[in-house]
Image (cartoon, rainbow, N blue to C red):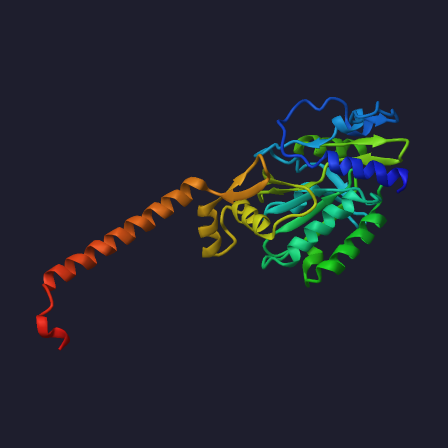
Length: 289
Protein backbone atom coordinates (compact mmCIF):
# COMPACT_ATOMS: atom_id res chain seq x y z
CA UNK A 1 0.00 0.00 0.00
CA UNK A 2 1.38 3.43 -0.94
CA UNK A 3 2.00 6.20 1.56
CA UNK A 4 -0.88 8.25 0.13
CA UNK A 5 -3.28 5.30 0.29
CA UNK A 6 -2.25 4.58 3.86
CA UNK A 7 -2.87 8.21 4.83
CA UNK A 8 -6.30 8.30 3.20
CA UNK A 9 -7.26 4.97 4.80
CA UNK A 10 -6.31 6.28 8.25
CA UNK A 11 -8.37 9.38 7.52
CA UNK A 12 -11.38 7.30 6.52
CA UNK A 13 -11.22 5.15 9.64
CA UNK A 14 -10.66 8.10 11.93
CA UNK A 15 -13.61 9.97 10.44
CA UNK A 16 -16.29 7.34 10.83
CA UNK A 17 -17.78 9.91 13.15
CA UNK A 18 -21.13 11.28 14.15
CA UNK A 19 -21.94 14.90 14.65
CA UNK A 20 -20.07 17.19 16.99
CA UNK A 21 -21.08 20.55 18.26
CA UNK A 22 -20.41 23.57 16.05
CA UNK A 23 -17.39 25.54 17.20
CA UNK A 24 -15.00 28.36 16.27
CA UNK A 25 -13.01 26.97 13.39
CA UNK A 26 -10.00 29.24 13.81
CA UNK A 27 -7.77 29.64 10.74
CA UNK A 28 -9.18 29.10 7.29
CA UNK A 29 -9.02 25.42 6.29
CA UNK A 30 -6.62 26.11 3.45
CA UNK A 31 -4.12 27.50 5.96
CA UNK A 32 -3.85 24.22 7.88
CA UNK A 33 -0.76 22.51 6.51
CA UNK A 34 1.02 19.71 8.32
CA UNK A 35 3.96 17.40 7.68
CA UNK A 36 4.42 16.26 11.26
CA UNK A 37 4.63 12.53 12.04
CA UNK A 38 2.73 11.68 15.27
CA UNK A 39 4.14 9.46 18.05
CA UNK A 40 3.24 5.78 17.80
CA UNK A 41 -0.34 5.07 18.88
CA UNK A 42 -1.52 8.68 18.61
CA UNK A 43 -3.85 10.19 16.05
CA UNK A 44 -2.07 12.71 13.80
CA UNK A 45 -2.69 16.29 14.86
CA UNK A 46 -3.94 16.99 11.35
CA UNK A 47 -6.82 14.54 11.76
CA UNK A 48 -7.89 16.13 15.04
CA UNK A 49 -8.65 19.28 13.06
CA UNK A 50 -10.88 17.47 10.57
CA UNK A 51 -14.62 16.88 10.90
CA UNK A 52 -18.14 17.66 9.77
CA UNK A 53 -19.97 19.70 12.40
CA UNK A 54 -23.74 19.82 12.18
CA UNK A 55 -25.10 23.33 11.76
CA UNK A 56 -28.74 22.53 11.34
CA UNK A 57 -30.98 25.39 10.19
CA UNK A 58 -27.91 27.49 9.29
CA UNK A 59 -28.30 29.59 6.17
CA UNK A 60 -25.93 28.62 3.37
CA UNK A 61 -24.23 31.82 2.08
CA UNK A 62 -26.00 32.03 -1.26
CA UNK A 63 -24.15 35.18 -2.33
CA UNK A 64 -20.84 33.33 -2.77
CA UNK A 65 -19.60 33.18 -6.34
CA UNK A 66 -18.02 30.16 -8.01
CA UNK A 67 -17.33 28.92 -11.53
CA UNK A 68 -19.48 26.19 -13.04
CA UNK A 69 -18.23 23.33 -15.18
CA UNK A 70 -18.37 25.59 -18.26
CA UNK A 71 -16.27 28.31 -16.64
CA UNK A 72 -19.15 30.72 -16.10
CA UNK A 73 -19.22 32.78 -12.90
CA UNK A 74 -22.33 31.83 -10.93
CA UNK A 75 -23.77 32.63 -7.52
CA UNK A 76 -24.45 29.71 -5.19
CA UNK A 77 -27.97 31.05 -4.89
CA UNK A 78 -28.55 30.34 -8.58
CA UNK A 79 -29.10 26.70 -7.60
CA UNK A 80 -31.57 27.35 -4.79
CA UNK A 81 -35.09 28.68 -4.60
CA UNK A 82 -37.11 26.00 -6.37
CA UNK A 83 -36.25 22.60 -4.92
CA UNK A 84 -34.34 21.04 -2.01
CA UNK A 85 -30.63 20.64 -2.65
CA UNK A 86 -28.13 17.90 -1.77
CA UNK A 87 -24.82 19.67 -1.12
CA UNK A 88 -21.52 17.81 -1.30
CA UNK A 89 -17.95 19.04 -0.77
CA UNK A 90 -15.38 17.05 -2.73
CA UNK A 91 -12.15 17.87 -4.50
CA UNK A 92 -11.80 16.43 -7.95
CA UNK A 93 -8.28 14.99 -7.72
CA UNK A 94 -8.97 13.06 -4.50
CA UNK A 95 -7.58 9.54 -4.92
CA UNK A 96 -10.08 7.77 -2.65
CA UNK A 97 -12.53 9.28 -0.18
CA UNK A 98 -14.22 11.94 -2.34
CA UNK A 99 -14.75 9.37 -5.07
CA UNK A 100 -16.32 6.98 -2.56
CA UNK A 101 -18.65 9.72 -1.30
CA UNK A 102 -19.87 10.51 -4.81
CA UNK A 103 -20.09 6.82 -5.71
CA UNK A 104 -22.21 6.18 -2.63
CA UNK A 105 -24.43 9.14 -3.42
CA UNK A 106 -25.05 8.24 -7.05
CA UNK A 107 -25.77 4.62 -6.05
CA UNK A 108 -28.46 5.81 -3.64
CA UNK A 109 -29.92 8.30 -6.13
CA UNK A 110 -30.09 5.66 -8.85
CA UNK A 111 -32.67 3.59 -6.96
CA UNK A 112 -34.84 6.53 -5.86
CA UNK A 113 -38.03 7.48 -7.71
CA UNK A 114 -37.12 11.13 -7.27
CA UNK A 115 -34.89 12.47 -10.05
CA UNK A 116 -32.10 15.05 -10.05
CA UNK A 117 -33.32 18.20 -11.79
CA UNK A 118 -36.97 17.37 -11.16
CA UNK A 119 -37.70 16.90 -7.45
CA UNK A 120 -34.30 18.11 -6.19
CA UNK A 121 -30.88 19.34 -7.28
CA UNK A 122 -27.32 18.36 -6.37
CA UNK A 123 -24.51 20.89 -5.95
CA UNK A 124 -20.96 19.53 -5.68
CA UNK A 125 -18.36 22.14 -4.73
CA UNK A 126 -14.62 21.49 -4.79
CA UNK A 127 -12.73 22.67 -1.70
CA UNK A 128 -9.42 22.63 -3.59
CA UNK A 129 -8.80 26.07 -5.17
CA UNK A 130 -6.49 24.39 -7.69
CA UNK A 131 -9.42 22.55 -9.28
CA UNK A 132 -10.55 23.94 -12.63
CA UNK A 133 -13.79 24.04 -14.63
CA UNK A 134 -12.26 21.44 -16.95
CA UNK A 135 -11.86 19.00 -14.06
CA UNK A 136 -15.39 19.83 -12.93
CA UNK A 137 -16.71 19.12 -16.43
CA UNK A 138 -14.97 15.74 -16.52
CA UNK A 139 -16.33 14.83 -13.09
CA UNK A 140 -19.84 15.84 -14.06
CA UNK A 141 -19.72 13.77 -17.25
CA UNK A 142 -18.52 10.73 -15.30
CA UNK A 143 -21.32 10.86 -12.72
CA UNK A 144 -24.08 11.74 -15.13
CA UNK A 145 -22.91 8.73 -17.13
CA UNK A 146 -23.40 6.55 -14.05
CA UNK A 147 -26.72 8.13 -13.11
CA UNK A 148 -28.21 7.69 -16.61
CA UNK A 149 -31.34 9.80 -16.23
CA UNK A 150 -32.36 12.28 -18.95
CA UNK A 151 -32.50 15.88 -17.78
CA UNK A 152 -30.17 15.40 -14.82
CA UNK A 153 -27.50 17.54 -16.46
CA UNK A 154 -29.57 20.61 -15.57
CA UNK A 155 -29.84 19.57 -11.93
CA UNK A 156 -26.37 18.36 -10.90
CA UNK A 157 -23.75 21.11 -10.79
CA UNK A 158 -19.98 20.87 -10.20
CA UNK A 159 -18.40 24.10 -9.01
CA UNK A 160 -14.89 25.43 -8.38
CA UNK A 161 -13.84 28.57 -6.54
CA UNK A 162 -11.19 30.65 -4.83
CA UNK A 163 -9.78 30.25 -1.34
CA UNK A 164 -12.05 32.98 0.01
CA UNK A 165 -15.31 31.50 -1.31
CA UNK A 166 -14.31 27.96 -0.33
CA UNK A 167 -13.39 29.00 3.22
CA UNK A 168 -16.66 30.93 3.63
CA UNK A 169 -18.77 27.99 2.46
CA UNK A 170 -16.94 25.27 4.41
CA UNK A 171 -17.08 27.31 7.62
CA UNK A 172 -20.79 27.98 7.16
CA UNK A 173 -21.69 24.30 6.78
CA UNK A 174 -19.21 22.97 9.38
CA UNK A 175 -16.88 21.15 6.98
CA UNK A 176 -13.33 21.14 8.45
CA UNK A 177 -10.39 19.84 6.47
CA UNK A 178 -6.62 20.23 6.24
CA UNK A 179 -3.82 19.79 3.73
CA UNK A 180 -1.02 17.29 4.23
CA UNK A 181 1.97 18.64 2.30
CA UNK A 182 3.98 15.45 2.60
CA UNK A 183 1.21 13.27 1.14
CA UNK A 184 0.10 16.00 -1.25
CA UNK A 185 -3.54 15.38 -0.31
CA UNK A 186 -6.32 16.82 1.81
CA UNK A 187 -7.55 15.18 5.01
CA UNK A 188 -11.30 15.60 5.22
CA UNK A 189 -14.54 14.13 6.50
CA UNK A 190 -17.05 12.17 4.43
CA UNK A 191 -20.71 13.02 4.20
CA UNK A 192 -23.42 14.92 2.35
CA UNK A 193 -25.88 17.59 3.41
CA UNK A 194 -29.48 18.39 2.50
CA UNK A 195 -30.73 21.98 2.37
CA UNK A 196 -34.16 23.51 1.93
CA UNK A 197 -34.99 25.44 -1.25
CA UNK A 198 -34.26 28.59 0.74
CA UNK A 199 -30.77 27.31 1.53
CA UNK A 200 -31.10 26.26 5.17
CA UNK A 201 -29.26 23.12 6.23
CA UNK A 202 -31.78 20.49 7.31
CA UNK A 203 -29.97 17.11 7.35
CA UNK A 204 -26.46 15.68 7.51
CA UNK A 205 -25.58 12.15 6.41
CA UNK A 206 -22.19 10.68 7.28
CA UNK A 207 -19.92 8.08 5.75
CA UNK A 208 -19.78 6.90 2.15
CA UNK A 209 -23.04 4.96 1.89
CA UNK A 210 -26.43 6.64 2.12
CA UNK A 211 -29.79 4.94 2.52
CA UNK A 212 -32.16 5.79 -0.34
CA UNK A 213 -35.08 5.89 2.11
CA UNK A 214 -33.20 8.30 4.38
CA UNK A 215 -32.31 10.63 1.51
CA UNK A 216 -35.87 10.51 0.16
CA UNK A 217 -37.42 11.37 3.53
CA UNK A 218 -34.86 14.16 4.05
CA UNK A 219 -35.78 15.66 0.68
CA UNK A 220 -39.50 15.41 1.49
CA UNK A 221 -38.96 17.20 4.80
CA UNK A 222 -36.63 19.79 3.28
CA UNK A 223 -39.24 20.59 0.62
CA UNK A 224 -41.80 21.23 3.37
CA UNK A 225 -43.67 18.14 2.13
CA UNK A 226 -44.21 19.63 -1.34
CA UNK A 227 -42.80 16.47 -2.92
CA UNK A 228 -43.38 12.82 -2.09
CA UNK A 229 -46.42 10.61 -1.65
CA UNK A 230 -48.90 9.71 1.08
CA UNK A 231 -46.63 6.77 1.93
CA UNK A 232 -43.78 9.21 2.60
CA UNK A 233 -46.01 11.11 5.03
CA UNK A 234 -46.80 7.88 6.89
CA UNK A 235 -43.10 6.99 7.06
CA UNK A 236 -42.26 10.45 8.39
CA UNK A 237 -44.87 9.91 11.11
CA UNK A 238 -43.19 6.64 12.08
CA UNK A 239 -39.55 7.64 11.60
CA UNK A 240 -37.67 10.69 12.75
CA UNK A 241 -34.32 12.14 11.78
CA UNK A 242 -31.72 11.55 14.48
CA UNK A 243 -28.99 14.22 14.20
CA UNK A 244 -26.61 12.27 16.42
CA UNK A 245 -26.48 9.38 13.95
CA UNK A 246 -27.37 11.22 10.77
CA UNK A 247 -30.10 8.66 10.02
CA UNK A 248 -33.83 8.14 10.26
CA UNK A 249 -34.87 5.78 13.02
CA UNK A 250 -38.15 4.42 14.26
CA UNK A 251 -39.87 6.88 16.56
CA UNK A 252 -40.21 4.68 19.66
CA UNK A 253 -43.14 6.52 21.20
CA UNK A 254 -44.95 6.51 17.86
CA UNK A 255 -44.46 2.75 17.60
CA UNK A 256 -45.65 2.28 21.19
CA UNK A 257 -48.73 4.40 20.55
CA UNK A 258 -49.48 2.51 17.34
CA UNK A 259 -49.13 -0.83 19.13
CA UNK A 260 -51.31 0.44 21.96
CA UNK A 261 -54.02 1.59 19.56
CA UNK A 262 -53.86 -1.74 17.76
CA UNK A 263 -54.28 -3.59 21.06
CA UNK A 264 -57.22 -1.39 22.05
CA UNK A 265 -58.79 -2.09 18.68
CA UNK A 266 -58.38 -5.85 19.12
CA UNK A 267 -59.85 -5.74 22.64
CA UNK A 268 -62.78 -3.61 21.48
CA UNK A 269 -63.43 -5.97 18.59
CA UNK A 270 -63.38 -8.97 20.92
CA UNK A 271 -65.85 -7.30 23.31
CA UNK A 272 -68.25 -6.44 20.49
CA UNK A 273 -68.09 -10.01 19.21
CA UNK A 274 -68.77 -11.45 22.69
CA UNK A 275 -71.78 -9.16 23.22
CA UNK A 276 -73.28 -10.15 19.90
CA UNK A 277 -73.01 -13.81 20.87
CA UNK A 278 -74.63 -13.10 24.25
CA UNK A 279 -77.58 -11.38 22.55
CA UNK A 280 -78.15 -14.38 20.32
CA UNK A 281 -78.39 -16.63 23.36
CA UNK A 282 -77.31 -20.28 23.62
CA UNK A 283 -77.72 -22.57 20.65
CA UNK A 284 -80.69 -25.02 20.79
CA UNK A 285 -79.78 -28.52 21.84
CA UNK A 286 -80.82 -29.95 18.50
CA UNK A 287 -78.94 -27.25 16.54
CA UNK A 288 -76.35 -29.76 15.44
CA UNK A 289 -78.79 -32.62 14.84
